[in-house]
Length: 72
Image (cartoon, rainbow, N blue to C red; front, side):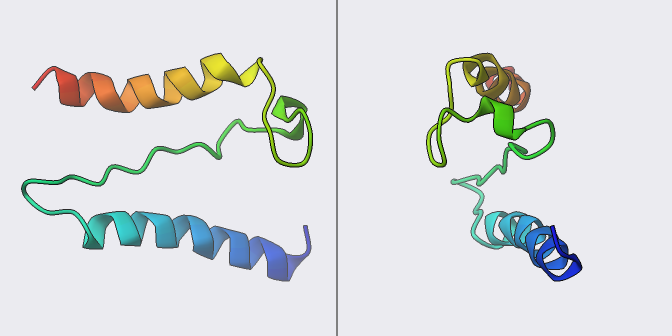
């Protein structure tokens, strides 16, 4: 990536956290799940769709977040 694109991409990741935080309420949590770290192009079947190998990747990311919520 170019330096400009890297800066923009990093800002987008921060914006997701900000949006989730600003729109959460006491009765409706917005919990961002980090789907970026560890994601590589080899997990894509084409330019848009991911392949079967990513099913465990996605499940483990959501499980990490949900296990803390579901125990409460």
